[in-house]
Amino acid sequence: MPDKKKKHHAIVIGINDYPGLESLKGPVNDALEFDAWLRDPAGGNLPGSNIRRMLSTDFPAQSGSPTPNQVEALFEPFIADYYDGKKEGERLYIFAAGHGFGDPGDMSRTALYAANAKRMFPWHIAVTDYVEWLRRHAVFDELVLIMDCCRTVNVPYQIREPQYTVSQGHFNADQMKYFYAFAVGRGREARERPFEDGINAGIFTRTMLDALRNARPIQGAVTGQALKNHIHNSIARFAGNSEAEPPEIRLDSSRDITFFKRKTAGAAEVRVSLQPYSGAERLVLFDGNFKEIRQEAAGTAAVTLELEPGLYKIAVGGTGRQKIFEVPGNEQITV
Image (cartoon, rainbow, N blue to C red; front, side, top):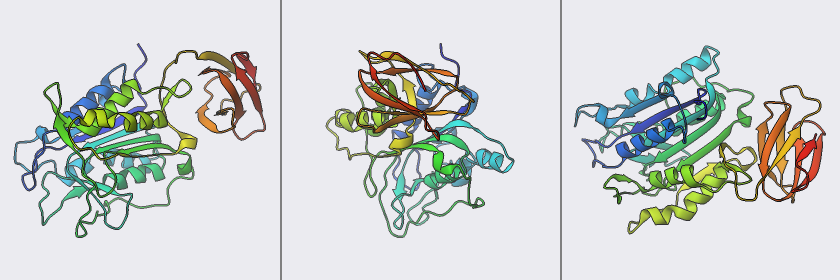
């Protein structure tokens, strides 16, 4: 059994009950299913103590909770620790499901309605603002954002900026890896439906979880791009007879996140020895067209890669050390 991902953390939010808006059936189920995947040794493999979760079912029905302040409190410890000079960890997952909307003036911003939202008082949580703050300050090495909510635009409903201190950020912020997945594009409506197991769930959440479990590896790694490919190819199947808008998924292909490593049929193990080795090297792998496939830190002086047959180039980032090799035929190389 793999060791717990003690340096991975998660925030999970699911809101069904909206006394001032139409209530939903799926978000709490979505949040519970994603929480279960996070804890699963074959999934995220996070220790339960690293997961901060808030559901509308945690509160009395029709209470209007959780409010914005209650949900925003999930983010506050990470922000406070940054100002205390603490580095939180490697990866943060943020999952949010419920009613949501997009900002009329900024296509990148999306908010989740709090349970006390009303037509004339659209109380909300500026989820993408919090995520971008964490990214700008490099509080984690990797950020994974999943929002299963509508992103409709109503001009009077503008996303309010959270009340945290704004600063220039961290000089390494541009090196952060990120994967942002929205159930729909800006201005579109997300959908939920009853599934064959009798559970009402978001179409996008079910598709995302299937991708996390079954996405085809790219060169032995289930990356953000692999998840994106799987989701776009399978969401119609999960929609069934329901209408489902295409999701919006953002990632940086040059710094893609590796969620898992899975061996594919025909893959060979290639042992890469780093000579010399300082402990700070980063390997950059290219395909036969010299297009970058992925980067990863070299935790030891010898790294094993699982690669499908083909021509490759591997380089040590920031140096002139590189080598072109072919698989099969070069199962041991030195750079």
